[in-house]
Amino acid sequence: KAGVTQTPRYLIKTRGQQVTLSCSPISGHRSVSWYQQTPGQGLQFLFEYFSETQRNKGNFPGRFSGRQFSNSRSEMNVSTLELGDSALYLCASKLERWQLGTDTQYFGPGTRLTVL
Amino acid sequence: SQQGEEDPQALSIQEGENATMNCSYKTSINNLQWYRQNSGRGLVHLILIRSNEREKHSGRLRVTLDTSKKSSSLLITASRAADTASYFCATEAANAGGTSYGKLTFGQGTILTVHP
Image (cartoon, rainbow over all chains, first blue to last red):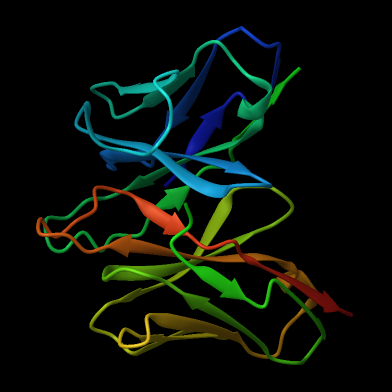
């Protein structure tokens, strides 16, 4: 099976712009999570989607939003970009079984966003 | 905020030596996962250990989990130069519903350097 794919791999934007990142999960995986990685804050959870519904959200401002489509592909959007939004954005998918939620999350290669 | 701490922050060893990394966390968990990351790329899943397990092996990897101390360790035996990477532990918190809906909480990571 193909792994988690993310597009684009690199983005350069300027402050005030908005950006949309895309994630395609492993075939058959319906849970998609997003994470932000920065040198200062490390890896932080943004949100998780399952069957087009956001089930969990991290502590990020409303400028960060996401959605999931019926084919489980997911997008995240950041509006009114700030310099501090420069980061590696990682998407992960998992095959959720209904016992204990112990499934592995598989990560994509990430999108490197630079805000100038 | 990060759930746990990893120790040491950096580890430098020679090829053939063993590498041990430790992770501590704060809340009750469903499982703990270890990931590897090379040079700011995506995370590669190494091993998952459930809260009712104490030890797990995968190839040259050995993971232990002590839920009473809220700690875990990752041992890489007979290390190779290719093992040079950052290693992260990530926990899935336990809640009444049995799943944390995809949210993994990461430690700050250990940077491992293996010299040929």
